[in-house]
Image 1 (cartoon, rainbow, N blue to C red):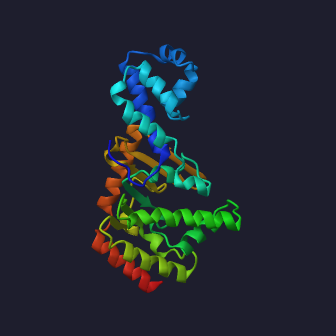
Image 2: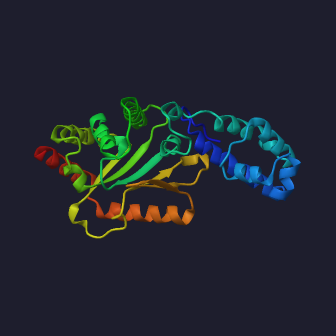
Image 3: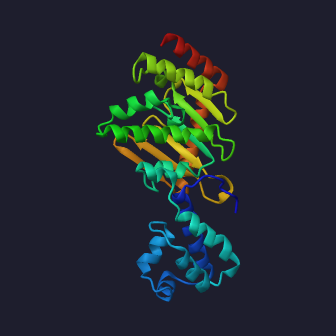
Length: 283
């Protein structure tokens, strides 16, 4: 299994472990009803483990490997179980393992279409603060500070020497002209976009206002890819009242197709940067 370096997205590792354990049970020719009593568990508990709703400790994994006669995978899966039970860094900021940040932490690439605001991975702190203050969620000063801190910590992977994150971002043109936080904040934000877009692992394109009808008029969305760790892509959609993550292949495939369509409609990177520069001059 590929090393994960300093990333610690335990939510993703729990999903990886759950899938591997389910496949081992099936390869052993056992049903949930066969395996659960042999492990002194209820069928519902084993089922929840296999769909990553609940975790399983190292002792539980060892018992499963014994039952499934999978000694050849002992070292690998016991280590994965230890990793899956680690607390992700984001837990210290009040976020759960199934938050978007929990998944992004383990991703190697994020594809994002930003319909209403600059992608979080590219936001300056004052811009992020203005967005948080605009939502109906009431936050204390300390909570607001934590939210902004999480956003800034996420951005470190764009310039990290190890576990670098690739960002492929498409931004609707209107985002560049909407003075979130006021003209000065918008100006600082546009300057930051120009700098960030020079990074080798960041691709920025602007979807022009005259693009017409397209597959993502309703909202922005993300597609997360996890590289060689064996985890399938995931889609994530934010909307005015919350967010939802999508895991079924048919849903994720639609998200990938929508993103590809948007890339074909968007300006090329060089043209996009020129448009950002014009928006900065006008801000």
